[in-house]
Image (tube, rainbow, N blue to C red; front, side, top):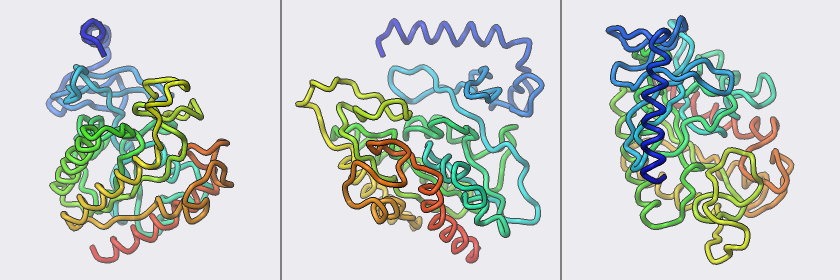
Length: 310
């Protein structure tokens, strides 16, 4: 992003906040967004009219170089349960999938409903969810709270980052490790039990940060074209490196890992371009309802095992 674009973004944000002055009210607990139950943190840049049918998002100052702010989806929409355990899932669009896009009755919240109420942070059906590690860091304090900016005491937080970090450069891979470690450290301060979900496979060819095909699934955009073959690399090779980094980070902190990568390759094979559980052909990284059912089961088993010890 060049400086001119950054300046235009900054001007847009300021103008947008002026427009929202009539609907966003600052208070001791944050900035209420219109008449909704969404409240942005006091240190936010304010409320933003949301996309995807959601009413509001929050703009936060960003640690991402060249980006003056990050727009964050809000936290869990429902009050915590007083008679069951409370579980939070933080992750990208695949986590949205096993949260709500499987066969009814077979999504993660359904499979543990007898002992826990499970919510997703951010609350963002149909989106890329928590996005990349830098986006996650910018927005993490929103994700771990309820959407009204009230603190939440979670019994278990399950989290994943990876499919939005597909740059294969050494600097980017090192940055992923640093940022994921910071996320894990921040989540440990919540007092919740933690578990990490390994990133699922990504079989297309990547080119400078994103897959070339299929398009339209929300993955990072490649910064080159189909003829730029000298910059091609296997997306899944990056995923495997990210997963090993994640294993090392979680092992150092005593955080258990759920191997969703092997769950998918156990069905589709170690390398594949088509598979019965892929949503598109050739396969990318989203799944059919049956695919999300298969991914949900080991997560539910791990949640049960963790909550039994709490």
